[in-house]
Image (cartoon, rainbow, N blue to C red; front, top):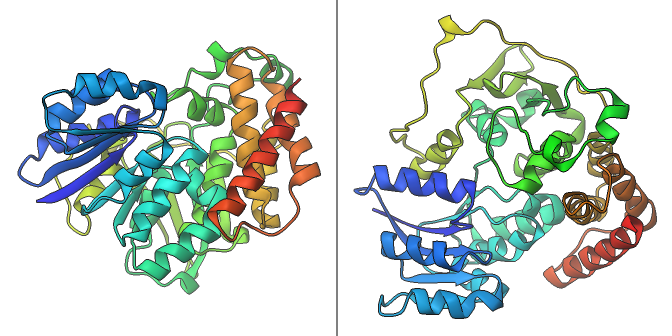
Amino acid sequence: MRALTILGATGSVGSSTLDLVARHRDRFRVEAVTANGQAAELARIARAEGARFAAVADPAAYGALKEALAGSGIEAAAGPEAVAAAAARACDMVVAAVSGAAGVAPVLAAIGQGTTVALANKESLVAAGDLVMAAARRNGARLLPVDSEHNAVFQALAGSRMEDVETVWLTASGGPFRTWTAEAIARAEPADALKHPNFAMGAKITVDSAGLMNKGLELIEAHHLFAIEPSRLKVLVHPQQIIHGMVGYRDGSVIAQLGTPDMRTPIASCLGFPERIDGPAQRLDLARLASLSFEEPDLVRFPALRLAIEAMAAGGRAPCVLNAANEVAVEAFLAGRLRFGDIARVVENVLASHGSGPAAATLDDLRFIDHVARDRARTSCI
């Protein structure tokens, strides 16, 4: 019986994790759950799972959460510190599915306890990759990748030496704008950007996917997660999203992980590791597949990917600044204050003014770099 803490329990990854827990009651129990501010839904989940602790990141939602949990014996808490406290509770695995840079502190809290982290919060490694990986080594914590692409690479690397790897490919669907002209992409509305062809995800990650920024963030995550040089990391556009990641080896072999697009597959891989557990995803029928196609990404029509590649190569604080500026710009786009084509412009402007310098050595350093980048991004959005 493994005890799980689920950070971001009300989101898409959290919901998929809970679906797997419900299918394997003999293997998993839930210790703690968190959400941003969805107090009623979080309380429902906590009661249903018999959790011992529930926390909302938004302090304003504390009253609603406490009232909804009254008489249950489940401890309620609120604020970013409470989410970090949930991550630090004794358990076997923390599923880190908080969105954005807000997930860094809870991930570090879990790592500080030496807990295994099933990582769905890519921003932890984008904004603070050096800091997080050093903490994991220091505390003997294992990071298991939940993102389908990184989980695919993790599986394709099994039993191999990194010195034998030539290339690691992360695949991308190409998003809703794969065949659009640059001019049409620049004028896209939020409703257009939120039409992901294969996955139902949160608004921010869906917009990132539309502009291929998400794939750029995933490259940076892979750089830290697998300790692999940027020059060996590549992106391939693969509209069918059947192959999620591939590893090319020095002998000419290429090992790929395939599966139908369903986040419960990589989550199940993490929950059961090093064993396998039954997963509910539709089984892949290769005979019925018409084709598997691949394209090189277009860095002119999708400049966000170019910016992420450049930030990864630059290192230092550049990835943290990239992430912070992008979060602000995407928020402005979703609020109707910015055109889609201006998201990359804002990020590029902030990188030019604030992207040089060493990476954060502490969490306080990280917060300062992130804060300054967000301020400059907000100014650039006006």
